[in-house]
Image (cartoon, rainbow, N blue to C red):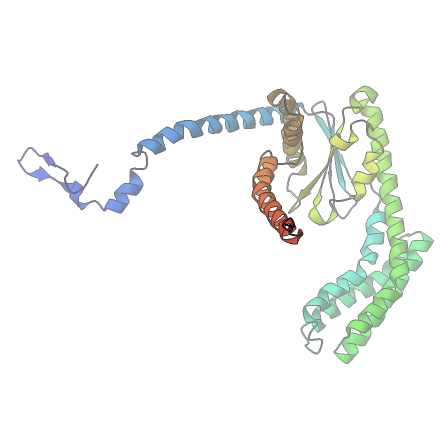
Length: 350
């Protein structure tokens, strides 16, 4: 519809209604978005994908209600929040004893000191770090005074005491001088390294004991037949998603023939507000893709495996298309170089 040649409409009083000429052509172009025939035609094709995605989402949403048994783990400061989803019922526990968090809390003291000083590493003479370091020192002194009442194992009490002593010694000197040096800081952290490792050992022992206990209990509760189909989804932030502490322990309780595909480490940018829903939503997608892959791509196992795994379906084709021109250019250069390097044939003697 044009605006310059619009004939207008004759009103009852004989006047011509020609408001179309006042329409901004650019505005009209934006409003009349379905006027282009190609766009309307393409929308009928886009509708195929829209319908597929709607049906895919509906299948996934319903499948979530039928996933069982599933163990969902959200890693946290307490050793992990574990949820068993089985036959429509859920049980959520923190199976790891408090020794885990107590040991790690003191092991984190050098890192906590670093986080206060880090913004001033190139300007230790500045004083912006003084007040937060004083506050952290107060926290450490309070913990130090109460440490003996925390009922820690003797070895953990000894290593934790040495870590706190080392930190308070370093912090006290820095606050007194109103300055700190990197060498002084690494002298402190190096001196308590073995004690940090001792605390790590206590934390690991508590982690293993707690996770193993809940896994044995849940395995008995679920029964061996259903347990063979168990999925476990471990959610963690990216920095702890490889060789995750909980995944390592859980793996030994799962069916060896399926553990590689049924134990899923799911890295997240942020720990989700609803870890179980996040885990089940991702797992539903994985399960339905596992079945779809074999039925949709029965003649190409490589593409089927891509749909079942982390690989994007277009990745192979993109790599081929990107690689071929490069390979062709490289082959041409190699051929030219070989021709230049080859000895020239001499003409036969007369």
